[in-house]
Image 1 (cartoon, one colour):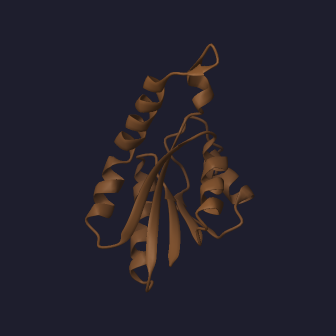
Image 2 (cartoon, rainbow, N blue to C red; image 1 turned 135 degrees about the vertical axis):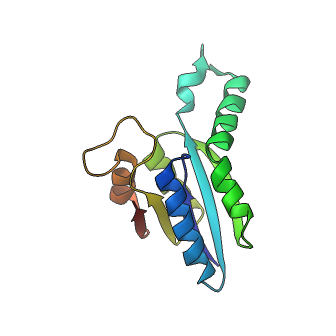
Image 3 (spheres, rainbow, N blue to C red; image 1 turned 60 degrees about the vertical axis):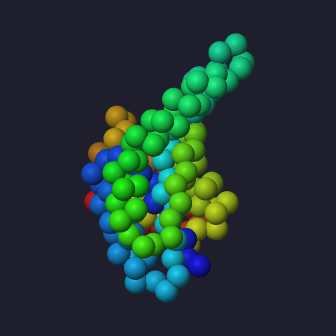
Length: 140
């Protein structure tokens, strides 16, 4: 089975990347799409060294909210798919998940909703390109 990792942050370009991945997966005999939302590092939510359980629930809800349209789009297909919300620096988390899940490729938008981006390429996309060991397709 081929696994395509598609990070999403709710942006228009992330949805474009998902649509591209769906078309690609339809052309493969046996494919699965892993939709991934990455939330800010949990360390921001520690109080006196202890993680607040409400913070984890809040971040999970944020991830589900940001990915609602993408999950609905995948739900309209007959493709195998999974959804994960993870926490940490986006580029590093995306690459770690790709490695752990033995993904065959990462398909993502060139820019997301991040307020910090380089002039040409979003900082997360740039980081993924630098760190990934699997093919990365950028969709603008």
